Length: 172
Image 1 (spheres, rainbow, N blue to C red):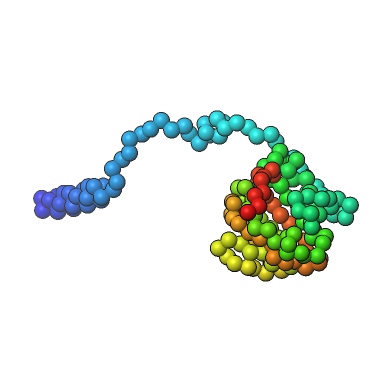
Image 2: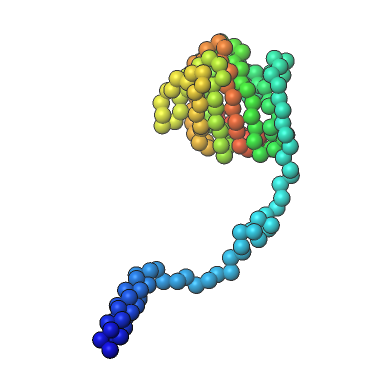
């Protein structure tokens, strides 16, 4: 009989611990009628299917663009993504003239990333000051960050990736 009592005491002690642990947990939330993840995926409107974009380097593909002192080589990604993303190579074609080049501005984008392919560029980013970017350097520019190009080498080329493909540039 003594054995039976000690077993029941152990059980009640274990039950007491479990009850105390349960009491420390957050109260259960009332269930809401949220759509399941798979239902949410189905409910979203479908975007047009993206396609493969292949671009091979050709000097004749560089054309005039946003800035008069630079030529742009579009990589075909804007068409392939139906305007979701733009990627182009920027080649500076004139010597840096601060009166023309160094105009503070921002781009109304969701995402912007720049990678230095050749040469170097000095850029000034709001909150960062002037930064020298060399071949192999990259940076992101948060939406609407104010910035300016202060100088660049004669052989400077940049890869720029932007979302969305079409965006406004505002000079300040």
